[in-house]
Amino acid sequence: MSEFFTLENYKPLRDLVFDYMKEAIITGKLKPGERLMEVQLAEKLGVSRTPIREAIRKLELEGLVVMVPRKGAYVADLNAKDLLNVLEVRSSLEGLAASLAAERITDEEVEKLKKIVEEFRIKMEEGDLEALIRLDKEFHDLIFAASRNDKLIQIMNNLQEHVHRFRVKYITEEKKAKRIYQEHKKIAELIEQRDANGARKWAEKHVHNFQEEVVRDSKYFSDKE
Image 1: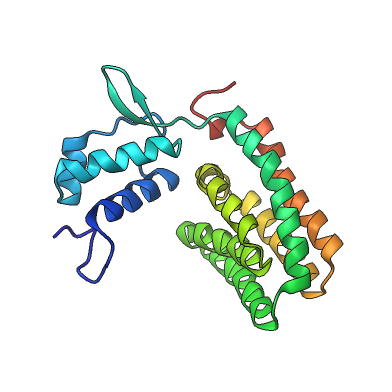
Image 2: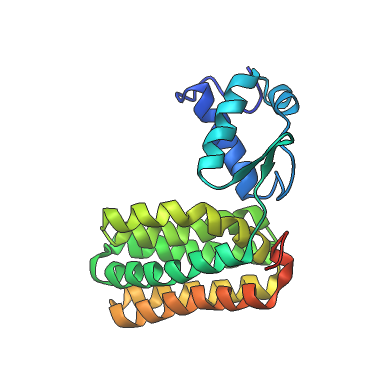
C-alpha cells in the first residue's frame, strides 16, 4: 500500500489516484506542460498503470490534461482566454451566491465565516501558503453552501478547478494576499449585516480585481494569448 493512500480510505483505488493527480495539477505540483509518465507515476504512488491511465482519461475530460498524438499526456497549459471566460461567469455566480447567503445564512455559519477570515489573517502573517489556499477555498465554499441553492453550487463546482490553479499563483504574493483578506472581511461583514445588495457588489468586485490582475500579468500563464 502506497504512503499516499491509507487503509481507512473507503474510496476505490482508481478514485484515489484520480483525486491525487487532480489535486497535484490544481496546486501546481504537476506543472502546466509537464508530461505525465504512466510508469513513473505508478511507481511513485505504488499502484499499477491501469488506475493511472484511467485517471488521465478523466482529467482529460475535465480539461486538466491534454493528449498529444504520438507523444502522450501533458498537464494542460494555463490559458488566459479560458480563464477570463471562466472569471466572467464566476463573477456573476459569486455575486448571486453572496446575495442569497446574506438572506439565508445561519448565525452559526456567520461565525464560521468570520473565523475563516480571521484564520486567513493569522496564516498570512505566518506565511503559511498551503493554509491560505485552503482557507480561500473554504471561504467561498461556505458562501455557496449558505446560498442553499444546489444548482448554483453544482455549476460553481464545475468551474472551481480551472480558477484554483491560477489562485495558487495569485495568493503567493503578500500584497495580493492582503487584498484577498480585506475583501473577504468586507464580504463577510456585509453577509453578517444581511446586506444582500452590498454582498453581491463586493463579491463581484472581488472576482473582478482578480480578473484585472490576470489581464495585467502574463506570469500566470504558460501560453499568452
